[in-house]
Image 1 (tube, rainbow, N blue to C red):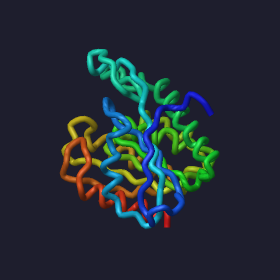
Image 2 (image 1 turned 90 degrees about the vertical axis):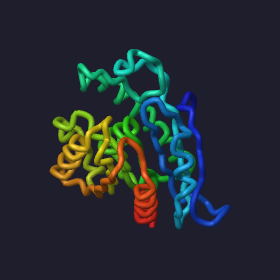
Image 3 (image 1 turned 30 degrees about the horizontal axis):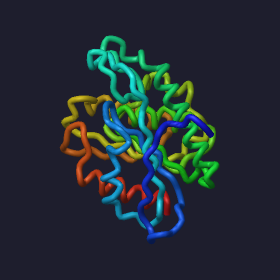
Image 4 (image 1 turned 180 degrees about the vertical axis):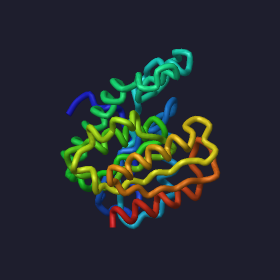
Length: 222
């Protein structure tokens, strides 16, 4: 498989040298890169060994940042909130190719988790809720469902039982928590089981959240 997104890979958890029992494909936020969550993984205390795959988003001009080029999964235009739809679908397709690569490396889709922070979480939710094969989990950090009003028209039957971890900062100035709550309620109305966490923080991650993520990964990969 050629021309895949550039990725950083880290293995963590379990006994040193033990084989990986699953993969987590984790997308960074706007303007960050594949190294953003590598230090977080190193703090996890996982019972099973997992491969963490951190892809780099492509460089693109971003309207909300005066057209400056940066790593972004999609453009953000504050004057047209749904204008990033085509970019989101294209980015989700690129992540789907990484899922296929993990399959080719011997990791079944049921042992793959899609994770993302902010923009990356939008992609994780977009792809994870539409996949025709059941994932191990979806982790959505400080993010939201894009175009939640039409979500029910596209979700897949295979995704309904996938565990979803959502976490958000109560004081997030970038993506207000009300937007995340609306996304959670949309998912609940479609019979998804969302494990919800909120923290006294802004648009970031905190130590308590990192511990909760580690515990959740242990549970879904048990």
